[in-house]
Image (tube, rainbow, N blue to C red):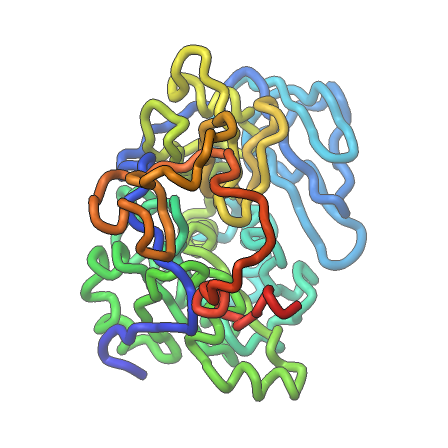
Length: 410
């Protein structure tokens, strides 16, 4: 086990630098509003009906089959609408949460069964899209099948959730608690923590502290995108071992999660907190101010972005990543359990003779733009820059793509 952070790398990739709209580390609390629309998983059915009273942390959705998914109410109030994909609640009464039974600061004394029960009851068994493996069949994998656990931050994205914002009021001990809880759940698995440059500076002593924790390894992730892609991430850590395991059909026996999911697991087991809120980065040049917010799941996007848009502005809103995220279809859409960022991308008209523009604020892999010399803040919008034309065979795709795909010969 390394006694210092080792730096990961991979073939290709791209570093995004100097963009406008990077969120500050400041975090604001957005209290519950008048209503909440809690999303249901496609396999779930509601366990409440219109008119029912619900409280914060109550299970309001569940699946009958496997993998099991539970939905926790992030608010207290009266159920107004139940549909196949969401439950609407009119928020009334006390909006504070109560600890789930069994949680303890002395979590090391808890049995694995108790920890699994806590994760299910708090909704944290669904902290990642694939589900955390437990005996409750909350994932396709069984706990004994897990061979690798990889926890990472999103340091390679254009816009990312600040580690300092996530760690507001916390210390490195919270991360180590979360990692140790995962090790107790998956005793046969290697546990790896991958931190970006920001997190590395924030937790300089974490590697030395991890040395005393059996089975934990700490790495510094590359600043190149897409380092946080699960397959690129695992290939960076394990290298040829992944290819060898693929032959043995063992490559997918891994649990990959981000820091926010890890902290949710820690909070559930140590304090009994249900998975009711998210830290969301408000980023992009379309916002008049960029920072982080802590917001309840189910809060409409409109309530989240209020006060952050200029008069008459209507930027394109994207969830989590400008590279792979989905567009927000309507501002009534609720914050989901996987939300990490809301990115505002300005809408722009088509450009006139764009090929003669100097590109002082444009990003490019090549050095043909002025931005490669003059370091002005770079911007982005939803326009198509350049021309729609056939590939010119520049070869940059081969240099950037981690998979080595050559589009010009496909």
